Image (cartoon, rainbow, N blue to C red; front, top):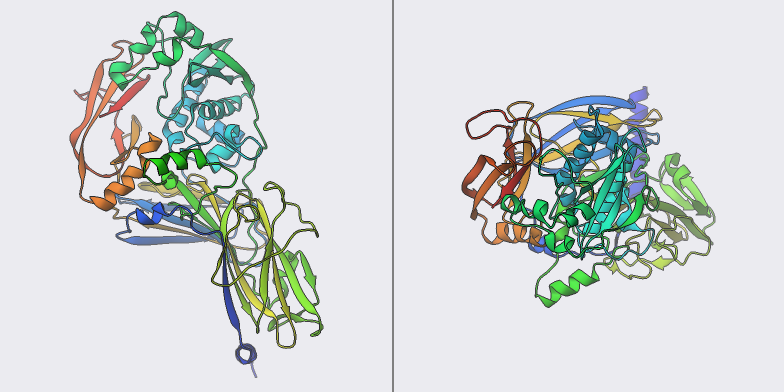
Length: 594
């Protein structure tokens, strides 16, 4: 018999041995879908799904994916370990190469190429203005541990926020890491019912406001110099604040005129600085769904205040529409000893080519598998292929932030086709849980399992594709002779996403959602309600560009849009030119959408 015949015969015999057993497939769920409005008013069904994949076996590998569609909606991106070694710290960069795992690296990329403190500050302020509203869950005033509200990595990678104080604190944490470190830092400032911030650089303070619905830097009458402090703006009598109303439609003199203008001290590092790094075991993958899957972390964050308001108003909750879910799926095959190293404890176990079976049929057999994440879990689905029968238990620690195993953990029995939900002992909001697979007697055992654990994260933690040439860089600290498969899935004919490509390396894009504004958190749910109830609906939209710095403060320089526009998400491109087609000088400009 040649080698090929031996392999085929081995597969056939293995199959016969397996099929002789009565394999029992069981499924379990921990934590149900808790944001039902996501399914009542879901994201639109994709029109044309496209899949693009590449494989990598090196610690650094670059790929290029070209997207010609202007109607692009990202669905998912998956990193899958297809080899036999543990892949350490896998990560994907997009063309911008923002590293959301590290604040110093992240901020360095934002200010890359800038040489003055003023320009560095404005770049961080601009980035915050452009991105932070997309992280806007509400409320964020109650946290169970470790000051989530002020923790910049946590806000950027997982939770976000829409309150003024946490936005100011988060921005100040970014400014603290502007290179060279220590050259710039900020503090929060208390106004009358509103919190803003001030940044220190070049020997003096400079005020700014980056709360989700405001975002402004106020200049002196010369339109070149930033007003030093909020106390100075208060002394001014409101003139410098009120003059932006024609540009924006609002002013915050009400919050400044009676303000104490007290500060809360320098913001450096707040809370535990999570690294948001993970490893992938063999037969493990992580899939990020760019539209949240329906389970949110209601344990470590307290949504009760806003939920009660919405219930009183007869409304429901769907602000997680700007978030993603990531599902870590581990599929250990116990017919091989490859996965033995990932078992925390085993009791009365023998490894065979049929699976793990009792070493002594008269005694109970079990294995314990740890499940940990740098994000907080929102739920899990578990499957098991028992050789005859068996049970699965899960356990958690008393503290939601504790990831250390103890023999004193309380085990909770999972029941098939029944969702386990118990706020006091569930996995929601926790960073670790443990599974125990248990079986007993002759013919019993465990062939394989599927452990799918879901977390809530920002959709920017793993970048999606954009219109044009996407330069993708896969990196890992160590491949351990393994390999990965990276897969993007997207809709390139979306009816509700439109991108206007830049025509030159000048100007800026404006992100806006027609039919439910992404900037104002209380209007976000309207977008999904509108596209379900009135999918062909339109709104009259006017987009105007105003001059803020330099000469002609407050002058409208461009009418960018003035038309009926369908509901949808837009990236409008402004080419940096005025209505006559002249290139405008560099500076600060405001856009106003009516």
